[in-house]
Length: 112
Image 1 (cartoon, rainbow, N blue to C red):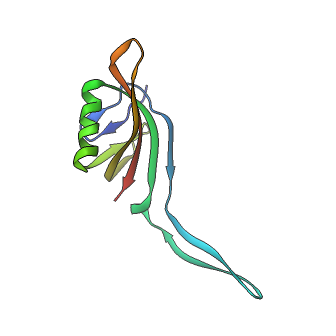
Image 2 (cartoon, one colour; image 1 turned 90 degrees about the vertical axis):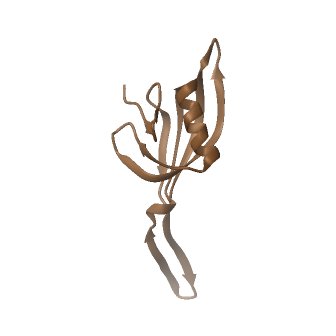
């Protein structure tokens, strides 16, 4: 089982729905006789990472503190890749039925 690290916190299990949306700054511009492309490249600082994670309450409160404090952290994904200078967004969270010490959270990370 591959866990994810968010600053000093770690997930209880492998995150689900993990994905990254790269910030690709290019667009197609229509012209009268064709098209051209305006391209500013891939801007890593605009990448967004999304996932749903299961935490112990203690680890979730650490992650929640990063969000409240707007703290930049290093996120290590399940494959072991480290994403530095990430801002944490807590999109939603809920306690697991019959397990009040476990929290499932949907998170987003912004690379800054």
